[in-house]
Image (cartoon, rainbow, N blue to C red):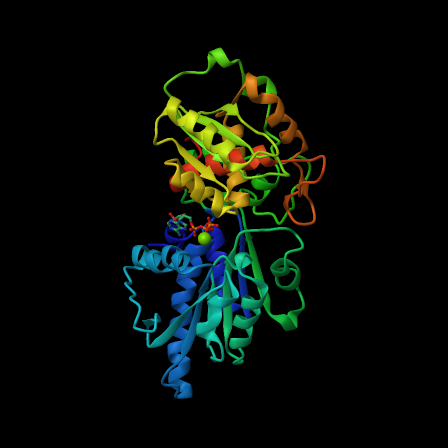
Length: 409
Ligand SMILES: Nc1ncnc2c1ncn2[C@@H]1O[C@H](COP(=O)(O)OP(=O)(O)OP(=O)(O)O)[C@@H](O)[C@H]1O
Ligand SMILES: [Mg+2]
């Protein structure tokens, strides 16, 4: 079997570079589903083999290697279980939580918070594999680099793009000083020739235009510009109330506020994945008893199991709802994935607002703009609110997150 049957052209290029170039950092960056982790998992095995030999020569009985990822979960899904699927290699943790392969002690490090590096403090590593490197805090990444102080230690990374001023881009990917020995490869989704073309086409069609498309599909390090929900179109997305079907799967989003407006939004999904924004109960300066009453009225109409996905920043309010028999749970507040999910619904024409509650929501949509410096939405101020949009995002994303990114849903 030829290599081209096993790897994409881009992956072969990376493999050539791995084998032939003089590098200390090998950074694969770019689009989602582009084939970065698959080739990096293979290079990880080659690295372990190399270290096994090196350790023999150096008479090092206990060579160590850092396996870094955002969380223990993401290391498991992206690497450990993929290795099993790709190569049939089953790795189990020992009582210290380390993995072992080819005589190398593999120490996991979690890059999402400074606490995640306890395990690697003070160690000397033969190398590191950092999955989803842009999600790492800079301190943790720096610590990993410092642990790889041996002359022969090398670091392989993969990452999706972030803002152009991200430290990984500025300090590493854009560093072309030959002394730094950094090799980087940029992937687009079209580099992955193993994906079903229909899947790619559907994903491209459903990915919101602007920052999300440029990052996820083209693999570019760009920031957001202009309004966040570029694909919103009032002519097609605001619908007369009497055209909204009955018998939907109903749920609510809640963003607590007192000085800020407090929205409770009622939504409903149909079987084709259309989401309807049905009612907007936003009010300012109301105490919790007022909101309990609103929620209880909604329960009477839609059943006691009606879920309220609420902002977790006010656990007292969440508890108060629960103690009144309201099915209130903490929302998933992950900002960018949440926005992307809602924007994807808009892009696919599956987001509708009932005419009777459209004004306040549209007002927020048209003012909801990117902060180019951070690549996040602009913060609220006296005139610009996004409380309703937050409540809508909490509800839609929390309800659907388990299903992941399914463009045709
Ligand atoms: N060489 C290959 N042979 C067969 N399938 C492949 C190959 N490379 C990639 N794939 C397929 O493409 C999918 C996506 O690849 P991979 O997970 O490496 O992408 P990625 O660039 O890491 O994406 P993300 O940025 O979303 O993590 C894999 O799950 C696998 O199904
Ligand atoms: Mg990956």
